[in-house]
Length: 376
Ligand SMILES: Cc1cc2nc3c(=O)[nH]c(=O)nc-3n(C[C@H](O)[C@H](O)[C@H](O)COP(=O)(O)O)c2cc1C
Image 1 (cartoon, rainbow, N blue to C red):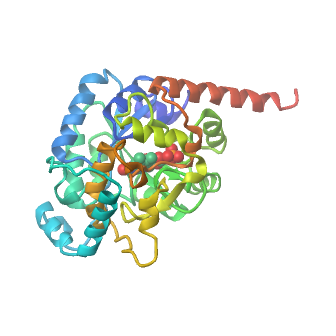
Image 2 (image 1 turned 90 degrees about the vertical axis):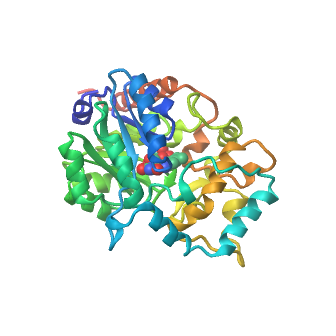
């Protein structure tokens, strides 16, 4: 496809795939899109291992890394991750941990030994934990883009990424945020609508995308939230999007590492079965509705804490419900973030098949529109 973004990144199609699985990153990039590895849940050692594997398997194709680079706040720059963890842990009421544990044990979710993953559940949501992830990613020749999940990245970090010759993308769900991204020097703005999986805002994609595209022009905008097939991609491109940024589509592919029971819960869900819930991360995040999401809303129960505290309470639950997805009633309390396009996902496909489907349907949609025009 002829597109400035494709040329800048050296990709064939402006299809971006957010994923936590290295195999998906490699397969999407090999199929002509851009695999974006979500790094927030990795320790720096784990991320280095994943990136080494990607570098060994991706050939000459480009890829990107998605991290969370928060704006700095008072004192944060100087505080190391250990001290920060101690301070944050003291802010978590004991009843939250007890409540989370009871939900898991009531549903027969087995426990796991400490497996050396992120200490205390303080994922890369903070400056102290995100910076090493960024440093592990820069300097790899095929790593061409860093995306920031929540908020505008600090200007000095944008400059550092630019100085290394990479592009910076940032997600947003409001025009105001998009304008702040542009002002800070973000190269590619990712406009994610309400229906998207993961952390998401309140404005639906079909209303959000054209507003952001117009507000930040000529900065390129990727349309995110609700892209599940090539017809939806055509709609986004028709509105002026420079490409599409997808997440849900890759959760149940052949190459995704999830347990079969987790993938199955996606195949059986309809678009009405998701909810924006603060119960896992502390910020509104779209996921499958289940007894866990309902319990944290019910009267008399503890209410979700803010980010990153709620994530520290639930980090163990995320690992346990993913590892033991098929055990007992785990799916009733599992963390299954996914967007409303879940209703369109009904079988295992390979990344290549998903890419081919997107492109074929995209071309068909354009042909249909062209055929509807009068002959001139
Ligand atoms: C399981 C899951 C986890 C996600 N985690 C992140 C994340 O860590 N960083 C980020 O920028 N976006 C994250 N997102 C959002 C995606 O990047 C993407 O914007 C979103 O999935 C697009 O909407 P869609 O799900 O309808 O395709 C996540 C999405 C899902 C489904």
